[in-house]
Length: 238
Image (tube, rainbow, N blue to C red; front, side, top):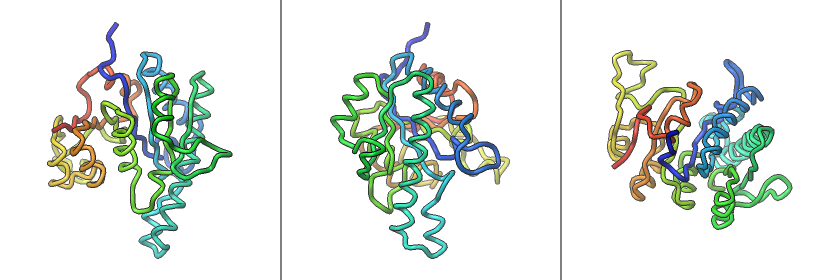
């Protein structure tokens, strides 16, 4: 049996990972599908942390552009990530996993406040840790949250789950001749504006020599394939 090539990882999910086709909100069947993939790597002994976005419920940036105060819109987006984190926690625990949701904004009735040492201890005890409410600050995306938390907890890699099977030279939905990039450096992602993560997140990963693998979450078993070191998606590494 193959052994995992990573001991501790951070899985970055968009909020859309929990919504059904053509809908918004949360589809319990989709949450279960994601949870089953997470359980697969958890059973292999991989210490797993998760950051999830809130785009299936609310996008702060969109309302900001429509005229809402940016800070207010971003705080509302953070609350959407908490909703998603609780939904994913429920799906994981129904499969028998022990989990903890940790939030950057204190809301003790729902989740633990984020404390780095406590998060690391949870991971060492084989609990799946879900980080919610972003960094607790407006103007920062959940991509930046993922990069920050991954560095803080000593994750070996960020698993960036998307709707496409890697990074392309341009948007493959617009340009049918776009070429898939199987390996790229952090600086190239920033310089060429490949838009798989925002520049703040990418710079943080680059400065801390933290690799990222971008892959298609829609194909069942892909998280496990990444953990086993199979060459899927795109590897971002300096």
